Length: 218
Ligand code: C5P
Image (cartoon, rainbow, N blue to C red; front, side, top):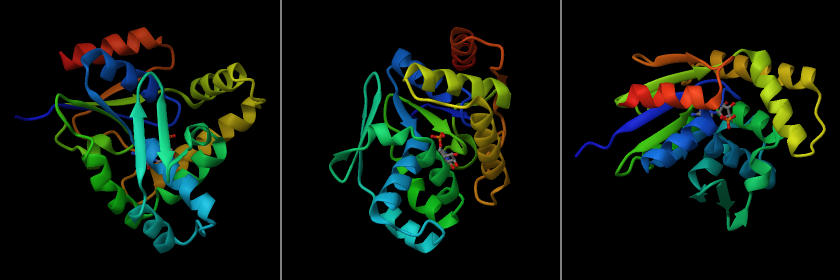
């Protein structure tokens, strides 16, 4: 029996996580938040004091990476037995993740770990290269994006809600910088996968995006 896969790729802050999690829950499918794997590796590298410019050293840490994901209402991740969930969302973690995600050896090591998430009855996979590299045969592929301004504003509101001080112009700059790194890297760059449906969520509500994606699946 073939296991159906829905891939949702796109830049940071486009709402992939919210939409993917909600759809996985609605369909009773598994959920892969591939960004959290790169973020977890970033935390492991930072904790161990590994030189993040040394691709081979980072790939070695990736090889030994043992993660436990618990995907309930919210995602919780354990690294070496320690709960790292709160560290996952930090800006610093995202910055280091996008640096080490550019190393081909790191991506090669993490490829199988991501493929293993494909389990019955189905999988929603969220990331940058889900439709292009990890699950090229996915039944439905979506490229979900929004303008850098819209994404920065959403991120700003999220941080404010959590009581974290933030500067909108700084967030916009960080987002544009990360987009550039993710799009320009040679290995599995962020792109619209062949056959993917393009959705710009700049002026759409979460429900509108959800309905659009569900319509595509059906
Ligand atoms: O999606 P998220 O912001 O959590 O991802 C963090 C970083 O991990 C991204 O900026 C990107 O560089 C990298 N990433 C990737 N491929 C994926 C998912 C994330 O390169 N499939």
